[in-house]
Length: 340
Image (cartoon, rainbow, N blue to C red; front, side, top):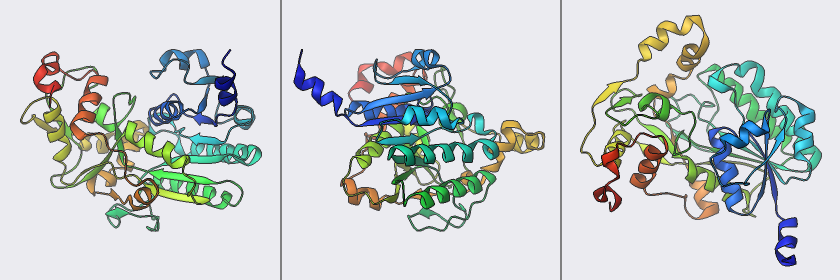
């Protein structure tokens, strides 16, 4: 037996990832494992979570439990140094009854075991019409119900930070090869179908921020490992900034080896029409202001800590995304694209 390897493994940092079955949670779990962390995931059905896991085999130890149950979170958190709070209500639904109780459980568990909390932050905390660039000190005056809940969530974390160190890494919308649910994969293109056109989410000339999920996850883990973190940190991840709503469609076209793509518009009119009946349309309309106004992340603190933001070349990132989503036409895998 290699006793050196065994001893090293015994002293590895350990992280509990709440939401490891979701897009951001899975990406962070995979990035943690790649950098030598032991990773635990909490799932109501561990066997199902393991079967759906797309990362390296045995990267996550799946434990049975529910983030809404404090006892489950406490049990799973024993001996960990970090709790990644990447759990979020599915389909944008039930934020008012689920979001704050889950963060309360995470805070209680972190206090008990002495762990740092990592929270993937959103832009919903801000009024997009008044905050074109989000900085650490930007006033949090949300323009949506979800934003109000996110502000309350971060306030609880800030109050708890005297006992529990907290890192919030804020980014825009996600894209990536293993993203299970995102506006890009579910509205702009169609998962599992070759791209023949793209739906635009923003009005003409309005910008939007995008984060390539593997880069964001890498940044989060490197920040967790940085010795210069303050007890309470809010860090912005800039990612891919589409200044006029056309840069991302052009990137998709370039990844496909095409000059342009046919463009349509996401049917926000239909969402508004159906919103009074509740469900997803109501929740989507709640965040419509964030598509009507561009919000860019200031990443100066991240650059101060890490030296540079992790950046996969944009065309490479988009090509990997389309391949992972099953959206790459068969002819797009040829040598001409492979050498770009």
